[in-house]
Length: 312
Ligand SMILES: C[S@@+](CC[C@H](N)C(=O)[O-])C[C@H]1O[C@@H](n2cnc3c(N)ncnc32)[C@H](O)[C@@H]1O
Image (cartoon, rainbow, N blue to C red; front, side, top):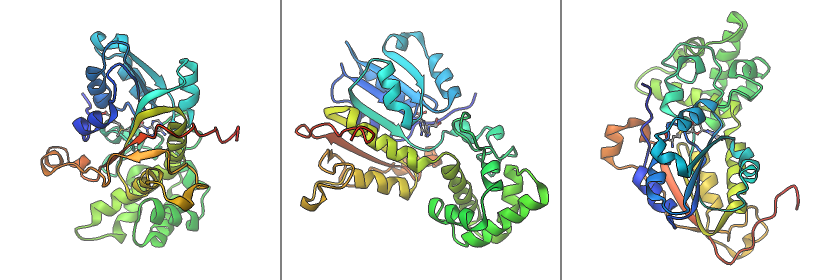
């Protein structure tokens, strides 16, 4: 049975729940670990709306134990579709949103998704299979400079240009790429103890590009600014520095000259002056937690809701 061990579980739930009778969104259901822990804390009128862009995660959550079912709704939605999904549920404001970014171990370990350099499979990499383009298709139409930009920006991969060249050559030689062919293309560039890390960085970079993960995070931060009630919380667990920087920036305490910057920096009151990191014990039990950084913020009570960008 594939498993995902939830990261920073008690910390996430503690920051998220301000009112046990509130409405909470778990924006990244994954294996359902966080959602179940939140459900265990809500009572009375409280409910949990679970979302994920991956229909398999939503299906899994719908099969959750019946005891949890009355307070739980699972919906397939990307962050950029969250507001529409909430509207469809006639829910215009929520007490908290939790987003545990990236991918689950279940997705990573599934060879047919091509997300792991350790598993042989087609180079798909979509977390949401309704996205039009797989990683292989994206690489097929992208030039070396663009691929190098992704590798260096989204993966912070050294020697990104050389890696991009190797990927282009591999595609020209083999046609459609698999995860094994991608690994074979870049592995010779990175010898020594950092080799596994470099492979992980390269795979991460392409996954971020395929799934527009930074654009999606931007949508999440914008949507949260509109739908979280004053006094409610946004909790985000990030796994790489670009994401964490975006969250940190959105949660920054107000500075007088920032009034024109979007999102309104005075909207959130940070609850975590520094990101919360897993302890050594959690990392030992779950090495995938190693890079996790949790930030939480409370929606300020005296700020009017941010207008929808389209309406503004
Ligand atoms: C780290 S896992 C979440 C694990 C979950 N918290 C648990 O306890 O099992 C991240 C999940 O977020 C989903 N995801 C990633 N980007 C998304 C997006 N833009 N919109 C919705 N879900 C997304 C992935 O499909 C994956 O299932």
